[in-house]
Length: 235
Image (cartoon, rainbow, N blue to C red; front, side):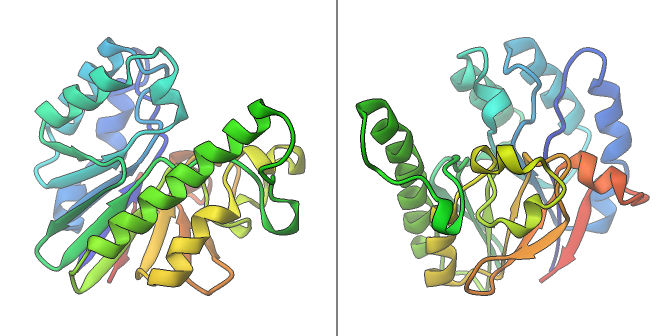
């Protein structure tokens, strides 16, 4: 089957019409649309409503996770409900299946990569930061474990690997994802993972265990001069 994926739509008053352009024809190109977080710009109810109205024009199965921007106004529950009411499957540690496709969706979190990954040591505030990433890791593991479909995809906002961040300033790599998120991927072996968040990153990468990873942030896809505002992937 063919899926389409894009993240970082950043819907707001002056960009909402661009979403229709970015997604034009996607329901003719793929069976399922995956939305990799930062769907709104500031996570306001109005932005969520505008996005829902634009997505309602896309006549296909739609599945999403929220990103850090969707939490900015403290209205993430409203954002989630508005999108759910519009028929979008919004995941947060949940498995979702349609036909032969299973999706495990989490936001993910920051923490760094490889030997530079932040450890749970020191002040309580630092431990809480690491605990937030561990919680996302466990949610992803449980969701992947529950999938029984032929094709399985992990949908995140934060990156589970460093290679798809190349092009971003090195100083912000620890805030764009974490190696911890790759643990469930390498253990349970989905077909691939998609994420957003890294606007200046690279399209393709892989976890240490070889699971393919795609950075589908809209600015990345636009920079590659793709004719469409989404990436299609055959499973």
